[in-house]
Length: 369
Ligand SMILES: NC(=O)c1ccc[n+]([C@@H]2O[C@H](COP(=O)([O-])OP(=O)(O)OC[C@H]3O[C@@H](n4cnc5c(N)ncnc54)[C@H](O)[C@@H]3O)[C@@H](O)[C@H]2O)c1
Image (cartoon, rainbow, N blue to C red; front, side, top):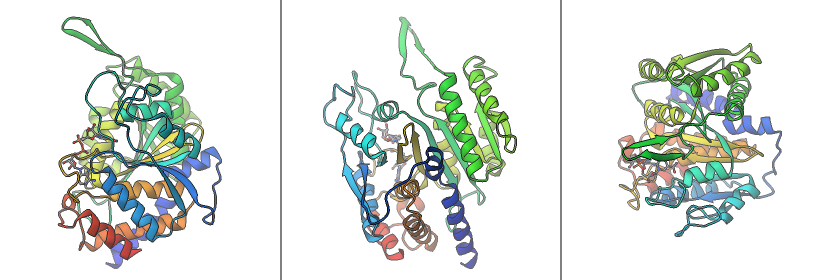
């Protein structure tokens, strides 16, 4: 137990210094209101289990006296022609105005004539980097005890450009776009992140042996940025080899930067190393100082409305939001209570092998504050 609390303290210290949100605020030179001034933040509870886990965050924030006023926006029932998606223009305006927010999972409605909700958010708010810290949780045993890495995913282009069409019957094309501007921007962020967090290595993940032009350009940009950071070790790893290395020994990696699709896949793989999607937070960094924290899992329709969801990922994402706002005392208190609750093992949700409901787990966290 002493050992566990030592690890927890070390983790908290490193999380505080290393939070992606903190780096973004350092990079953008932002200052924020103090605790006496409530800060308005946008909240998208989202779909499926989203409202249940968003309620957990609100409860924990209330119990910890966090000076946040939520501006809540739900996904619309009809397509808003101004966004061509189910996300309303007003909700996007809310994030642009507040510059900070928390997002629950959003189900992608099946159909034509509208954009994916997550893609709309990324494109409209120019959320160019998705940062996912991934670290072993003290007290929650997985196959690996020493995971401590960060994936930084380019979020705006690559295979997710949304440009697909049929060439002739039976032949379709999907266009992968890589630009110098977006590649330099995400590489710059990755190296700044590594520097600000005292991390030693940045690995660019690619498949440039096959996609020589697109991934080739991505690598060229990473190399250019790497030259400005001689103190950081820079390496390039082919994506398939990267997967094998991650599964064999995740401690080989530190900060990983990669194009969109690879980032989507690798970051979920990394979530699996530490216990699953229910535990993994993330933060989207946008131009103009926007930080939109979000849980990486989906809306989990199989358990929605059953009071079974694990709110940890959204709670830890909310913690990164607090760090972005420089509310480190509150962030530490909440993070410590979450980790303590999981380490104690008395209250755990089903995905962690326990039998607690979302409500019971949330109450245990509040009691541990
Ligand atoms: N960022 C996002 O908003 C996002 C991400 C992924 C998927 N989605 C959407 O979510 C919907 C469902 O997707 P999916 O089923 O492929 O993935 P999912 O992440 O919703 O679920 C995968 C599995 O993990 C479990 N799970 C996920 N989060 C959990 C949590 N917090 N606690 C306990 N168990 C949890 C689910 O019960 C399910 O068994 C789809 O419409 C998809 O488009 C949204």
